[in-house]
Length: 247
Image 1 (tube, helix red, strand yellow):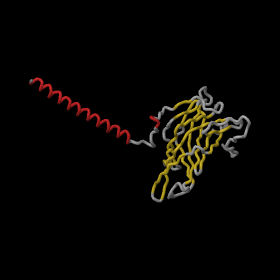
Image 2 (image 1 turned 90 degrees about the horizontal axis):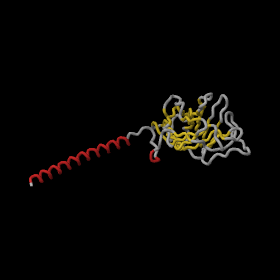
Image 3 (image 1 turned 135 degrees about the vertical axis):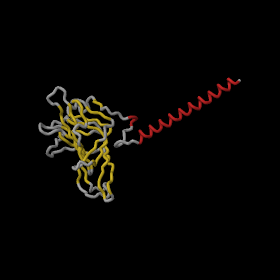
Image 4 (image 1 turned 120 degrees about the vertical axis):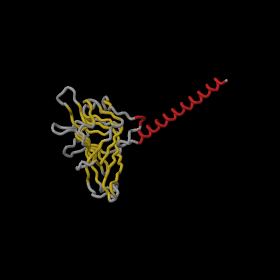
C-alpha cells in the first residue's frame, strides 16, 4: 500500500511495528501505523453511458490489486477508503453513529465511482469526460463498533449522476469490512448481514423475473400431470372393479 501525503489522506509511515495487513485485503493506517480500516471484497460495476448509437453499457471488475489509501477520521472529517485502478476510483465514506451512547455503530454512508468516458473502454461514447456516480442511500452497511461486517452477496447498490439518473449498478461480493478497533491487524468477530447467497450463486443484477416465472410454470405443469395421472389411475381402478364384479 502506498504512502500518501495529500491533504485529507492519512500517511502510512514506515514504522517499526507497523501493522501488516492480511493478504488480499485493503487497509488504511493511522499515524501510529495501526490499521483503522480493513476491507476485503470483490466488486463489479455495470456502467451506462451515452454513445453515438444510443445508450450502451459496459461491465468493469475492480482488480484485486487496486491501490488503497484513505483517512482514519478526525474530529470534523469522517473516515474513508479510496480504491483506485487505471481509469477508475471508488470512494467509500463511513461515519460513527451514536458516539455518545454506550452502543456505537459505524456505517458505510456513501459510495462514489469516478471514471472517464474518454477511455477506450467506452466505445463510441458521446459527451466524453470525467464522470462521478454516487449512491443516494445514507446507510448502506451498519455494524456495531468493534465488529466486522460480513455479507456474501449484499444488495445491488444503485449509483446516480448529478441529474439523479441511474448510471451505475455496483455489485459487491464476499464483503468483509471493519472500521476502527482493528486488533492485531485482523478482522474482529463478524456481524453477518441478513442476506444469504444460495448455492454459492449470487442473485443477478436488478430483478430478473425469468427464474420465478420458469419455476411457477414448471410447478403448474407438474400439478397438471399429477391430476391427469390420478384421473387415469382412478379410471383404470374403476374399470377393474367393474370387471371383477361382473365375474
